[in-house]
Image 1 (cartoon, helix red, strand yellow):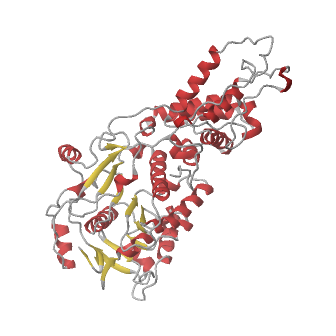
Image 2 (image 1 turned 90 degrees about the vertical axis):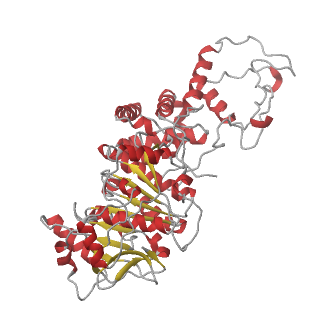
Image 3 (image 1 turned 120 degrees about the vertical axis):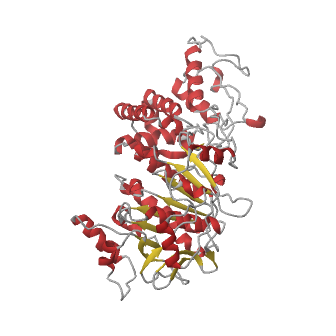
Length: 520
């Protein structure tokens, strides 16, 4: 049910509606296991889809896929609907399924270059020194326009860094071979966990998450994450990367009448477990700024204390289901949750949090002026779609009719850092080691004179190491009598790569807040 008053969430002493124009002020759905968080998430997703807002959410238990099918009569849900005075439509909503390994949905991939060193270091559990070496490898690749598409590209880049540590020290800093070895072992661990399927091309196009169907309903993108939850760091890293991509790719829109996309982070504690302060700072910055891109971010978790305070402060719309105060930490969580609500003189908020039944919640939504509403003890409305999983046959039928088609089905392995570094290594191995005993005659060209500037794309001279925009001179040593010292393979590589513009990223890669590549 969506009217001019907003998305109907539930009812206490008054109807509680989430205003679409304030939905990009983000939100929180919290509560213990079995208290109704999934129902609330599904109700909000339906409401957004109904008003034409695309939704992205991760299905960590396999029971959100039912949003694609009409709801079925259930005595408890029907009784709740009667208490609220509403009639359920019993309808499904347009859905696209995604899956990192491609078995339960369209494959989702990202390139190593796009993931960036910050998130990759967190995924691999690197320490500060190892993270510094990883940053060095990315910086070298970024500076020279070398694409790191998959794990073999990063392996090749790390090998080159280790082999040429001395030549790179003055420009990029010292390199520890032990740190390179530790990173390589971490990459091997990722491969054994099957993470290599996530890295590569074609990479997910953010535009595919921003679609509506022919009737104008927002498409609900569901990531099959039940198996992915066995690798919690990969799950958290993927969602942070996706949030970063949205932030870097979407233009500013201010405060639109409704969001461009609503993003639900289920099991949100996995985003922040063991996260360094630098990463949490950047996540807080993205959450704070992404609202102006028209994106609403909703964290779903058991305990509000799972969310860092500076991130929690950004979440304006809140639905708090029951918490169990069995331990001192639980009691602190109850007090902390109660203190975040605007007080209602008719409710003892802290006591109510422990007394709520299934389907009940404390709700505070932003009002017309953007202020937190007075907390209400409310009965959450039931969803119109099915509660629970769908069959394999139903999923296959939805995938067959998907608007995404087959564009992500086949992996593409184009020329990238691995191929370029391998080519360079082969060229160095076959280059003749001998040198002439005499320089060429004045005005001529020979082995001791610099080669002609290589052509870049479209016949233009490629950039050189002599400075921005300067062509190579092509001159011999003064007087034609002093031969040049033969350059090392490392120097030759750096010059060769600097002249090459055979990358679709251009001459240099620039990164955003969370390390994703800025689209220029």
